[in-house]
Image 1: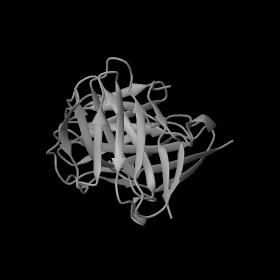
Image 2 (image 1 turned 180 degrees about the vertical axis):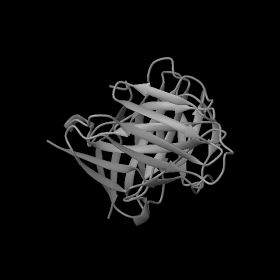
Image 3 (image 1 turned 45 degrees about the vertical axis):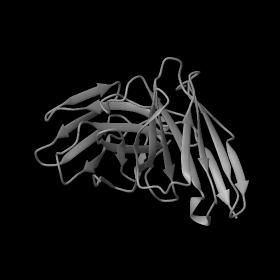
Image 4 (image 1 turned 180 degrees about the horizontal axis):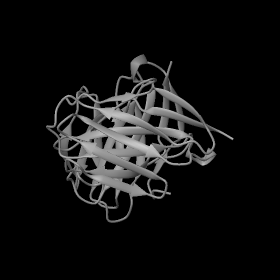
Length: 110
Length: 114
């Protein structure tokens, strides 16, 4: 079992603000770190899969970094928009499955 | 859209009953995984099927069973339902079975056990 902690649990930001949240893990014994965005009543959607220490990924206004040595990944959203409101899930991959955190619920206030 | 569909979207059962949940994966995806998300928790791995064979199982009792079919559809069966089985059940497909690949999720089946 891989323990995955996400913080904060929830977050409210104003439209236009930039924000970031954290996924932390005590061990680097995993294959990859995944980030998913999950809008209410929809399917979780993959944002990034990162495998190497120092990996940085970017998709539009959203980016993520991975530091396996210190046990964390950050997800950044630049200039938050109301459509960014969702739960952001982090997961570590084992041999054939993912271990998920409980997510960060982001609400962007127009 | 992920191309993964689940049915039904909601289901109410009583304790002791049996339930079958269905998933249709993306065409060409050989792997399907099932996850359970209880209230306030992250999704927890139930099991994975690769080319119709079970390829890994999480910490769930044998009354949770599955099937995968050649047409990229799959089922999750739960026997002798318990109140704690009330949860959102997600299926996810991927091309292969390595966990470096992103998963394509359905929107889930919300199961309530009364």
